[in-house]
Image (cartoon, rainbow, N blue to C red; front, side):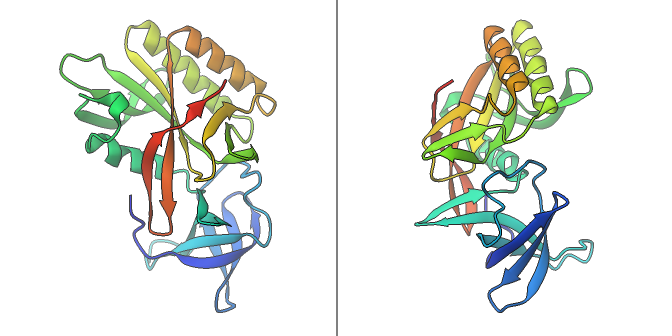
Length: 234
C-alpha cells in the first residue's frame, strides 16, 4: 500500500484531543496534523519524536497534514494510522499474498454480522468455509522486540472476540488477525495487565475455535506492506 503523496519529516510538539498533533516541519513552520488513532499511543507520542506527515491539498479536509509514521531511527518505523492495516490487508488478500488464506478469492470488506457489528473481512472461496477476519492494529512495544495489544482498555475489542466466537461455533472459520505496524518487533503477546477483560475474552474465543494470526509489516516513508507471520506467545 503506497501513501498517496510523498511524506515529509517533522518533529512532534504534542498530541492532544486524541486526533490532533502540533508538529514542526523541517523549515521551522508549525502545523496541525490529523492523528488517525483513537488509542493511547503509549510510547509513540512523546514530545520531540521524529515523525512523518502526509500532506494533502484536498479542499474538503480542514487539516492539510496527516500523521502517518514514527521514526525510531536505524531504519525502524511504526505506523500510527489505524486505517492502514485494512487497506494493506485488502491489497494482500486480493493479490493472494497471505498463504494462510490460500484459495479465498472473494474479498468482502466491512460486512454486517453479529449484533450491529461489521467484520473487517469476509473471505470466500470455492469449497472453503467462509472466513470471518477481524483485524487489529498493533503498535505497543514496552519490551525490546515484543509487540503487545491493546494499548488501552477496549470494550469494543472484547465484543468483537465474542462475535468471532459465535461464528466459530456456527462452523465458520473465524480469525483474529493482529497486524503489527512496527518493524522492530518479532514477537507478539497480549497486554493483559492493561485490559484483563480483553485477555479473558481472547481466551474464551480461542476455546470456541477462533484462530489467531499475527503478521508483520514492511514500513518505509513510501508505504506499508504486509509481511510474514510473527511468533505469538500468549
